[in-house]
Image (cartoon, rainbow over all chains, first blue to last red; front, top):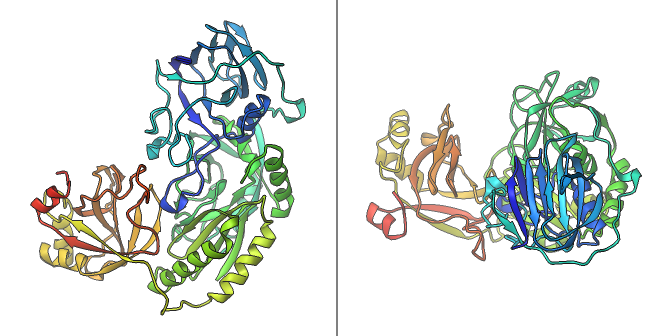
Length: 308
Length: 227
């Protein structure tokens, strides 16, 4: 027994960096919705970038550590407490046998990432333990199920080490209004110029309809010349426009193919901000050229030692 | 053919936006060529009816250079080479009996064919595997005979059983696992189309060809079919 989960919370999932190389058979990537927070949590502990963590959405989660170890908490502030003392995210700390870590409700952001030294021990399925509920893939029991009450997660005991904190510059503020950079789609299957002019005119709003597959936004309907396209492979961050004209930004658990007209693609690194946004957050879009965002993503990959 | 950079590390090759056998042949050949020549850069590749979507490794190549390489390769494959070897033909046993073929009688009625006539029209053709998506192992096959081509149900079923064989417009497909779905169901196969524990994972891949072979109830059950 290692981490004993007493309250599983609203939606708590085992996630590693995700599943790659299987999209041709319809298997999506999965992985952390907020990659920025996930990678920093592993970085603070000196973990491999792919070490498995818990993605705790909204809160209501509580667990007891039965081995001493270093842990890191990044992402949303979900009113976490360690033995009833408040603990803030974006830092690592030491836990002893019997320590209780609890999350109540969101103060800012939606998803917290809990990492332990060297990661949770979860068997992989198709080279990843990322949980994708819809595909019945990954997770503790390799069936895509979210974490349930009274489950346990193994990890190695580790000695007390220096606690670390993410440099202030890299700690995002989760605000009520965010701006996302995006690359307009210029192909024959895009919604065209008028659609993209509508998108950038006024902010949209995060709707109630948000999950790991996609974030549905609401605002001025985007006119499309056609209601469907011949289904094609879909990039992460793709902005789809269904019949009702309300854009959907596709996230980690998206279907690998889609048949709605496309408007563009949100800059990869900006998806982390969207993933932390609650319903009613204002979202404005800023068109950019790929050359403006390519170097940033490359630096990110190099900094965190990602192989792809 | 049009090559479009979609994001920092994804690109799509768009062909004439129609569903056709020519596209199928061209795309299958180009996918093989990309895997053969540019494999070191590829993270994920999704062939579809009229496109190839590629996620590439930005640590190994810049977007501009990758587009250049794709451009060079596609120029060699500008037209389909009909002499080249395509994927194998895979046979899928199907039980078209009424207890599993929930919409067979409706299709028969609308197409003015007997139920056997619908089964014959569906099982005589060899289908192209255009794409796999929607769900793991869900293969889009085409094209079905005009006479039995009907749109999806207006209200999707909440639950379609694993192995169900459906028709939607010109396409036909098997549900690899139980899920909600709106396709017209005309039979069921005992074959497990996706198995995360098997070596090949899926029974077939985009680029293959598929033929459905009618089997009777006993044979369906013998092959592990569930009613």
